[in-house]
Structure formats: C-alpha cells, structure tokens
Image (cartoon, rainbow, N blue to C red):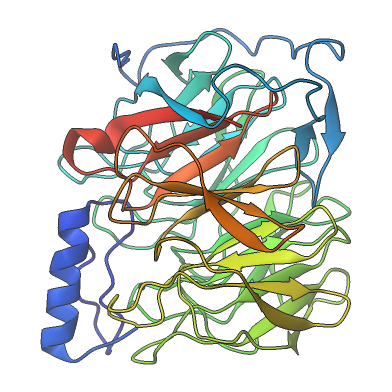
Length: 419
C-alpha cells in the first residue's frame, strides 16, 4: 500500500497491491482525517523469446479501426461457442496491471510488483494463440510499478513514469521495440509522476498528463513526448490538479479527462478537454457526481461511457451509477446503473459495440452495457474476484484478456472473456 505522503498528500494505496492494502489504507486515511486515491504456466522474467511472430493474415483476423488509435477486430459472423464465459488463461510470474496490445496480436505487460511488493524491471508477453507467457528479451532500465504505457504510431511502446521500488514516482521513460523485445532509455519528463495517463496524438507525439508527485500531491501539469527526438517538453496544464482520474481519447484525437481528486478534497465532478495542436485544456460540462478511478470507454458513435468509481476520497462510497459524455454538446447525461457498485473497474468496448464491465466489485460478477438501450446486464462470472487494480485488453479475435486485481496468489492470475 502507499505510505502517507508528506505535505498533506493523499493516503490512497497504489492500486493493484492487494485488497488488504486497500482496507488498511482506508483505515489509515479515516483515522488521519485525510482525503484524497488453471494449469499454471509461470515463466521467469529472464526467459528470452524470439522476435515477434507475423500478425495473422487479413483473412484469419480481419481488423477495423476503432476510437482513437486502437485497432479492433471486425465483427464476427456467428456466435462463438462459450459466449459470455470467462476461462482461465494461466498464471503470470508476478502482479502486472499494465497491458498493451502489440500489432502481432500478443499482449505486452511491463513492470509490476512481486510478492514482496518490490517493483519489477521485467516485462512479460502473452500470446493469445498459444496461451503461453514468455519473458521479454530485454528489461527496463528502471524497475516500475504502474507506469503509463502507450503504443506509438510506428508500433513501438512508450513506458513512462510509475513508481520505483521505494514507491517514489519516476520521471524517466523508455521505449520497447517489439521486433527485438528490448527497451531503450529516452529523455525524462520535467516532473516525476505516477498515476499519469498517456495518449498518442494525431501527428505521433504523446500526451502525458496528471498523476501525483513525490509528495503525494496531484499534478495539473502535462508534457509532450516527441518520438523523433526522444525528448519531453511542457504543454498547457489542466484546469485542475488531478490524480485517480479517468481519461479517454476521442475519435477526433482530443482527450477527455474526468474526475479524480486532489489533496484532501473529495473527487471532482468536473471534466476538461485537451485540444491537440493548441496545447490547451479547456473545461467542459460536469458529471452528475464526483468520481475517482472511474472507467471510461469510447462508444462506436463517439460518445463516452463513464462508469463507477468512488465518490469518497477514502473509498467509502463505491458507485454503481454511470453517465454518458457527448463531445458534440460537451455535456454528461445519466444512463442506467450497473448491477453492483464498482471502484477500480475495467471497461472494454467489444466488437459489437457493447461494453464489458469487470472487476472492482466484492464478487466475481461482470456486466455488459448496451449503448442502444442504455442499460447494464449480467454476463458470465469471472474465475476469481478482482477487487484491486486489474487490466483488460481487447484481443485481435474479439476476446478480452483480463489480468491482475485478485488477492494473494490470484493477483498473478489471468483469464479470457469470450463475448
């Protein structure tokens, strides 16, 4: 769990470091009066893997462009066997909560923490076709837990910030090359930050925004990474300092940032938009309720689902409610509520346009949001409860890979959802 920061900083735990740690952090925060965020196939991180295998052919894995820069599979023509079910996907070597889909269909998981709560410099690769895990050929120059990770336009992956083995935020950044499986050190940000978000903008640069600094204080600042020079530069700041916030990239390249919190304040209901090319954040409409750690999913029509989160800085009020943000009008409207309150949940838009909601609850339930009617319905249950920070990744065949978020040994587990 996160230790209390100096300067009146927030006491929320680093998410993904266990349910027990979360409960402890709540107790500490309340007492201090401070608010504001099967077969197993485990391989050692040092195992070397071959260079990336070629991606599936267009005839075997057709793809279509989705919101932002993400590529998702085209809609299947028939309902597959086992639809709506979760199945085990083996076990990872450690707790890893950052996953990125590579262009060859594999899933990269960078850093994480071991059973002693130490940050890791290793990376793990999951191959959905074989169901096997393998260690990346190279390691990070700096051990990191929960960095911001994003794919660049050329297929390389930027890894920036996060926390080191002492749980101190990092300013450094590295690039992963899927063709070699190795990392290369880049320039550093002007501010060390953990809990940040990163988005590849039109033109190829990367926006890194928000998070918290070494004192535990939320940050309003943002930076731009230029892949051509490997360096960072400052850009405009948000209208409010935000940690534990939600963010998503709109189809037109803009980035919407919602909620989060700062210092002793309860979560914000406010939201803002980053306009690429201008370097400016502008306020937009507000949500109906303040939320920290909400889940966002960009819908097929460009609107954004904002679901769950917590309306208390000390995790007392997990939310079942959801809202829809319309970028055309800049407004939020209430939609149906989830069947269970969820805090630290994942939201993944499926090929058919529905959104899979999983994790963040006290049970293993999962739900589907139907944008056409604005309601949530239960789907199959996960193989384990994932109440802590987890990660969900849409695979090229339309399934969803879910990892982390469990307690004890289950923190290393993973599973796959078949829509």
